[in-house]
Structures are given as structure tokens and as C-alpha cells.
Image (cartoon, rainbow, N blue to C red; front, side, top):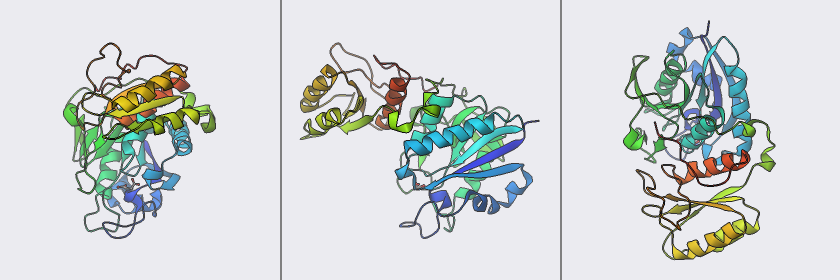
Length: 316
Ligand code: SIN
């Protein structure tokens, strides 16, 4: 019977101690986080510390180790699902990475907190309880994020507030489901974004394709693009303005990069929607992907031996 939920700790504010600002993330072990939620004592849980960091410092090494541990635990017949405790700052990147590499049939639920465990407003315990409920739910699958009673898909979840307790949303797609009294109220079809390939599980991180993000803005020049090409970056994502438009200075540098064999995509800095259309002569579009997600997508596609035009995965 599948009933065990494995909690993989990676740090973040959910594991922090201190005041509401200026605290150090990643201080408490995942076992300590579980001990602070009495309602979890009724669940068959296992805890494992994969990392202990502030998620702004997330690395490809930690991603690879985390993905390997997720694969290990999901393959165990008695495991219903995995919860990953994470920092809020890059949770959306890790969720996207795990889904595009693993596309797991069982649920992998990322959760986090905006306040340290010692705060009067600590949101970690309820988020952890909700995340475990989703990971054990027979209707859940794939990588999702659970925060403030909402289940978000890996293509849509986004941190939109730097300090507010209710900091995450799913943009116009809306949440997949609500967690209510440890049950699920499903609001739309469960997301099912496929895997682009599992090379990231085994390939040495030093050999992963280097892909960088360069922002288009008033007064920008092509120095960063040319430096990345000279440093051996294989891909670049330009964080464009509006509908993926890019400053003329970057267009010239991007043309040089493409002539040198680099793949260059354009995305948008707009908070909602995505780049619409692919007019002739424009750089390939990253579609609905944010610049941070487009960077992961391009890196994984290059790792899988793909090049060419991006086809952004659907937000469904
Ligand atoms: C982090 O992302 O690790 C720190 C911020 C947070 O978790 O809210």
C-alpha cells in the first residue's frame, strides 16, 4: 500500500529562525520542522536533509542531487509521494526543473514559508501539513507547489510579492486546486507537462550546457551577451520588454551570438501572459515561460540534443 510520504529538506525561510526580516534561512533540520507540526504525527513520514541553503544560492549540483533522491523514493512501492521543503525565492525554478526532467507519475510537492519558524506569523507549519496532504492524495500527480492552501502548477507558479504572506499565484491560469481540511478541491485539469529528457540526472553538472539571461533595458549594450559567448555559453535568454521586444543593441549582439552557433531566445519581463506570435525575422520566442524558466528549458533542451525553435509547454 502506498502511504509513506518522504519529506526532503533543502532549507529556506521555512527552516529559518530569527525576526521577520534579516534572518538566516536554512537553520532548522527537516526533522525539526516535522516535530513542530503535531498533526503530522499521525502520518507515516520519513525525513531526509538533501541541502540546507537559502534558495537564492540554489545550484545545479543541488538540483541534480534532489532529482536523484526524488527518483529513488518515488520508485519505492510504499511511497505515495514526496514533499520538498524549499526557499520561496527560487521555488518556481526548482519546480519547473523537476517537472521537465522527471514528469513523475506520483506527486512531488514543493512547499515553503514567507516567515521563519520562530515568527508569530509562521506560515510553514500549515503549508507543510497541506503539502503532506497533497502528496498523499490519490488524485495528485506530478510536480506542484502548495502554499497558502493553493496548489499551483509547475509552469504557472510564481512568487509575485517579496514580503507578503500570500506571496504566490498562478497568473491567469489560476491554481489547480485548493487544500481544504486536508482534502483537495480541484479547480481545473491537473497539469501534465511532459519530460524533456532525464539527462540531468546523470550528466556531470560541469558538462551541463551554460545558458544565461540578459535583460533588455534603456541604455543596455551588448557587452554581457558578447562576454557570455566568449565564455562558452551555449544559450542565451533575452529578458525582453513588452511582447518580447529587444533593444537594438542587444539585437546586434544576439545576431553575432547566433552566427557563432549559440541559441538565443526572447522572453518578456511583463509579469503576466507571455510572448505572443513569432514574426518573421524575430528571435525565437520563449512563449509563456518567464526568463528564469526559459533558461532552464533551453538548458534542458540543449542537454537533450535539441536546438531550434522553442515550443513552450502548455500551461495546462
Ligand atoms: C529562500 O528562498 O531560501 C529565502 C526566502 C524564503 O524562503 O522566503
